[in-house]
Length: 183
Image 1 (cartoon, rainbow, N blue to C red):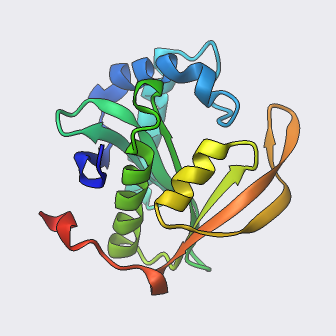
Image 2 (image 1 turned 90 degrees about the vertical axis):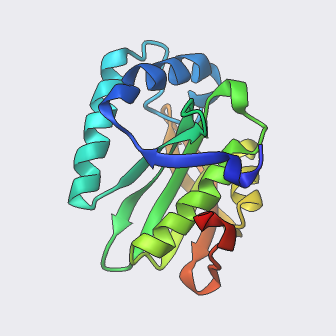
C-alpha cells in the first residue's frame, strides 16, 4: 500500500466488531508490545475503548483513530496520547492487524497522523517510544520520517519486565505538509 491508500478517522461505536476482529487476529503479534492486548480480549473491551476515545477526543486529552482502507475496512489503530500541554509534546502510537503488516499501512497512517497533529493541534513535538526489541515499530518510525534520538534505558515496563526503548521524534519546525493530502 502507498501512503495515501489508507486513511485515519475517529472511532465510532459501530467499529466495535471490526476492532475486536482485528485485535483477535493479531494477538500473538501485538501482545509483546501492547499491555491491553491479551488472549482473553473481548468485544466489551473494544466497546469500552471506543467510548474512551470519543470522550477523550471531545475533552482534547487524546486523539485516537481507526486506520482504514478506502473501503472502510479497519486495518488497525493509531493515536496521539500522553499530551503534555505545558510543553506541547505528545506520544504517537500505532498498530496494524496481522494480515496487513509489512505493507506500509502503519507508516502511511503515522504520516497522516503527524500531519493531523501539526495542522490541527498546537503540539510542537511528537514522540515515538518503542522497545529496542520491537524492530517493526522502529522501522515504522524511521520510514515515517521520525528522527531517531537514542536509547532510553528501562523506559518501558511490559509484562513485568523493563525494556530499553528507542526514542524518535517529529518536531514542528521540520514538518512539511504533504500537498497531496488535501486531494
